[in-house]
Amino acid sequence: MEQQEYFFAVDLGATSGRTIIGSISDATLNTQHSTIALEEVTRFPNNLIEQGGHYYWDIHALYFEMIRGLKEVARRGLRIKSIGIDTWGVDFVFIGHDGAILRNPRAYRDPITFEAMDHYLSHVVSRREVYDVTGIQFMHFNSLFQLYAMQREKNSALENAAKILFVPDALSWMLTGQEVCEYTIASTSQLLDPRTKELDERLLASIGLKRELFGPMVQPGTVIGTLTEEVQRLTGLGPVPVIAVAGHDTGSAVAAVPAKDKHFAYLSSGTWSLMGIETKDAIISDLSYERNFTNEGGIEGTTRFLKNICGMWLYERCRLEWPEEVRRLSHPELQGSAMSVEPFRSIINPDDDCFAAPKSMIGAIQQYCRDTQQPVPETPAEICRCIFDSLALRYKQVFEWLKEFASMTDAQQGDMSVLHIIGGGSLNKYLNQFTANSTGATVLAGPQECTALGNIMMQAKAAGIVTDIWQMRALIAASTDMVKYEPQDKDAWDKAYEKYLAIVGKKS
Image (cartoon, rainbow, N blue to C red; front, side):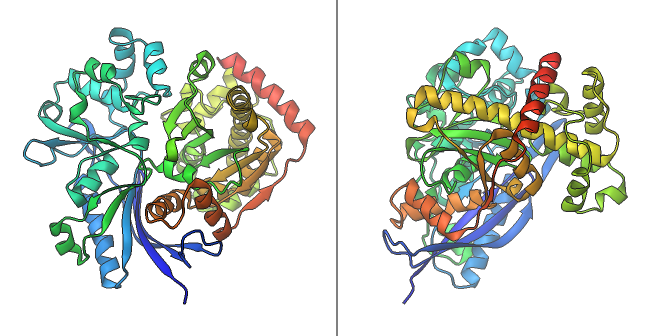
């Protein structure tokens, strides 16, 4: 008789969240016949709250939605083996000495962080010193700069905090009463030294904090605790274990890349594009500093060496500005119309500062083209084609850098010829083909649900169903379909890349 094991994943993004049941069939140790399936139980908005000039997350609403999903599991009589939670990075929750949450947590989009990074790096610890300790890409909303800004404003929640828990750890605490600091989520903070795999005491002291304010560091796969009696009563479940999965959603996604061996790069494609490689150790050097690459924690002691790229943010913002008759078109219809437009007519650097938060994304793209003496895209099709061409060329630039870093640190990975595209963007057939064309790599697109799959599979590892990351990936590969894209039109894309580099140089 086929054995079935059930796991419960909470997957939270910056705009919405879901609870998901992952079921693994024929779930016996080292089986070669297991398959994994996902079923969405609940979906809900994650609302950004603006009040008093600040932005907050509603942490109690997220807790309520976890409980609602668990109630549904109990109603259906499913015997879940464990629970895992992944979220976006950098944000955190303050817990008071009485065990209560000290107001809703600030959101990373809070404007207080805009000036904090430059002030900290100019007056407290230098940019190079911070990078040499953490190996993290500089972004103004990193936890280090959020906490520094709160210290400067004499934030009352910070001043009265007994514990500081990153968002997935805070939600696990709400379910179990146990305080931990999960490694992958802590690695996004720009407070962690990837060599020691601990929060750095000097950086903490620079913002007036001590290590004991944070929970004990735990690695993915650790049992945090079991549901409290209160949560058991609210949900109708028993003492189900809560597992520390890769709490950072990208950490869970990369853990689920269905690669066969280490000769690969990945592109987690969505609003942000995160392109990287998986390495044994952090890469912290003059070159990684100059190119602003980041070293984030992965499972089994690995490092996610990657670069954040603007991604489909450009397209999404333009779509909001286009007339209603354009917005009514499906994505395939709109993107298909862009394929009839002259290629490489207008090229931008997607990561230019002017695209970070413009009042008008269309206006910003058009002004960039004027500033670089290019034809100005006017129609939605022209703008869409400009974005897709430019993203693919930016991907080539970062892919070439990754190959260079890989060859310097790990000779076995230097010949990587496969790029796995995961996440929502794996469904974008036009951009996937362009990415294969530009990079010269074989692109394997899918699965779309890598974050949830990584969450579930870390729980399965904790349960002993799989033994390591490669068994996880083999099971995922056997359970999902990938679409292959081979490079085309090499000469045209090589010439376009020369044009891209010349344009980027003009604007730098």
